[in-house]
Image (cartoon, rainbow, N blue to C red; front, side, top):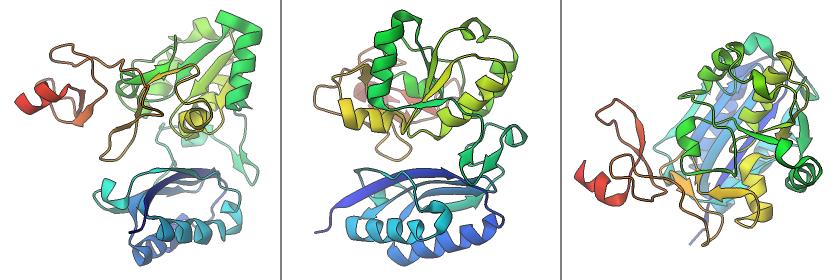
Length: 283
C-alpha cells in the first residue's frame, strides 16, 4: 500500500498568465488523483496538496519542471489527499489574502523588501544575542495560536489575514518598531508578506522564519522555543512534532486542556473553535 503524503510550498515569482498556470496545475493534479488547495496569482503560487507518495512525487517533479518553480522549497508531512474534501485551484489577486496586492513588488528573485530570513538555528542565535528584546510576532489567525505558538509570542487579535493591514496601520504594533521582530507562520508565506508590510511602515529590524513553523519543527521538534501543536488547513486540523508536545489550548466551553480545533459554527457565530472531545460531542 502506498504511503500517503502532503506537500506544502509557495513561490513568489512574476506569472504573466496565472490562468494558464491554473489550468496546468489542475490538469496535473487531476491526472494523479491529488486533492488540496492551490492559489495562483500574478505574484506566484501557494499550494498544499496530498495523495499517495508516488503520485505526490510526480506532482513535485512536474511542478519543478516549470523554470520559475524549479527551486520551490517543498515541505513534506504525513497525510493524504483524503485530508482535503476536493481539489481547488483558483486564480486570485494574491497568493495569500492580506488585501494589499499593490503593496507587494515581486521580481524573478522573489518578493522585494521582506525581512531578513532566519533559519531555525539563526532564530536561536538571535535570541542568544538579544535575549528578551526579541519579539516573536505570530503571522497567523489568532485561533491557530491558541493551540501552539512560540514562547512569549505576540498574538495579534486577527480573525483573518486581511485584518493585519488595518491593525498595522492603526499603530497597534508601533511599540515594537525599535525591537528585533521575528515574524512566523505555518510554512513561511504569510510571515514573508507580513515582514514586508512591517518594514513599509518603518519597523527597523524585521526577520522572517524561513520555511515557517514547519521547518522549525523539523529541526527542533519540541526541544526548542515552540510550544504546543501546529494548526493545519485540512481535516487533520492539528499536528504534533513529537509525542512530547505540550497541550496549551483550552476548551472554549469548559476550559479543559485540548489541542483540538474543529470546524463548528458555535453560538457566537465562529466557524472554528478550540473544543475538547467531550464538549464537541455535546454540541
